[in-house]
Figure 1 (spheres, rainbow, N blue to C red):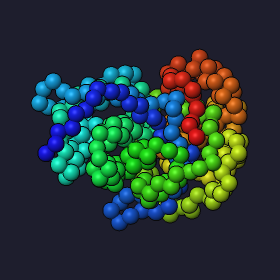
Figure 2 (cartoon, rainbow, N blue to C red):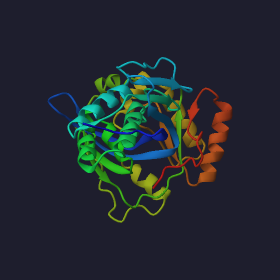
Figure 3 (cartoon, rainbow, N blue to C red):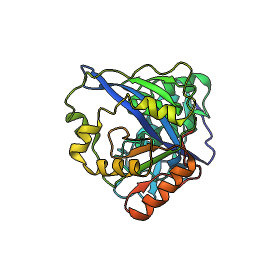
Length: 302
């Protein structure tokens, strides 16, 4: 078995944003079927560093604003991802050395923006760069075993996502969005939100224009005919979500909606200047709220 050399490095785990999320069914095994439009923010994300460990075991340390209370043992998704990657690489006669991981946790936890799935995908991306094509494909094709959001986070492009999250259709013609993410500092349990759903057989997304969207206003306009079916049950758990949405609309957002299972709310503005001005005012008024934009260029990549 060939042992892979893993150079020290750092990778970015961007927040996942569900611009629209329709719950359209449920499989017999309990997994919900979704139809969602997903983008990724280059203004908000965790940072993951990895290097070969000095000892014979993997290690994980977590730092940053949202590190408190996160497990660093085998139950952590990053160490589960390492175990998964080792097993898949072994099928190609490749061995990973023990690794030391350091996570800077910048994204709020249980916030509807990827979180642990983004971290797992970032680690897989780093490891996949070391693997030959057959091992690469084996890792990517089974990434859903780590969580329904992991495949879309691994792909990392604007996409229409369906199934339980594993069917990804990259979306061309999406303009750069002046996107602001705001979380009121409330964690929301995804299973609790799904349990509170009244319907699980809602209509899918409307057709996406074949020619794409010319500007952010066209995206916001199209989103007006879509929903996040998880927002109403999430509001019953965390009514603060509504306060965030109202504030963003009062600040001039063209649309404000919860992402994923909450409690993070995204807003699309008409320009970067309008978005940044709103961010400054909200940050001054609501110091306990988390806002995207700690990293430069607070916008969603096309």
